[in-house]
Image (cartoon, rainbow, N blue to C red; front, side, top):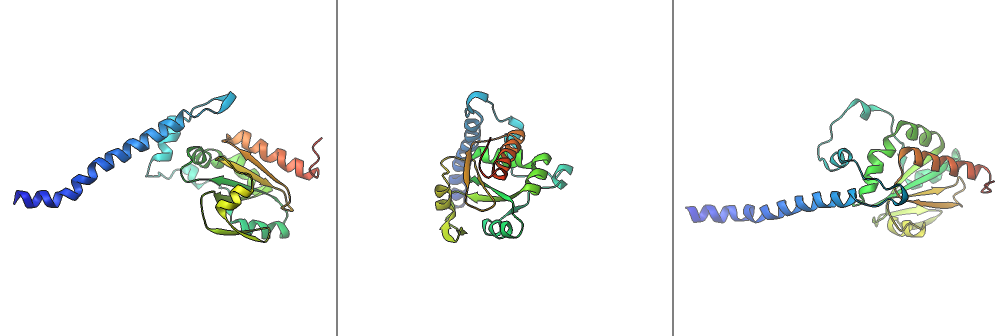
Length: 198
């Protein structure tokens, strides 16, 4: 009888080291992300933020009920720019990118950023590793190919596009809310001057 129980438990026992190993990888990944250099203004992701990113359970708070960025598809952004011209920003990300997740949790949740984006921009998300096809300027292309065509080489990258969809500016790297809003304001002003910054 004991031998039979052992055979039945074997699949379960074989999975235990994998579960433990997976948990170790998960912890190590976020420790590595925590020590990524940001250049001159080197900064670590606060552990509180890391815990909120890797936590499988999301607790709903009052802040969750606040206004959010109106994310739309790339196709819809192209249609809307013809009806109601606005500049566009594309958040190019990957599922494994730690700093992309920080921007989602912090930068894109900032109320000043949300208000500015929803008023002046069409916001689009683009998974740089997705083979799903989209139509960009009349050309059918996979999201992965489009990310490369837009000059994206690292993540996160914010790609800024003017109202006519003929001027593209990729801006790589993580940005805090204030820096991100300043980037959007600068590009908006630049396009209003017809691309001639004085």
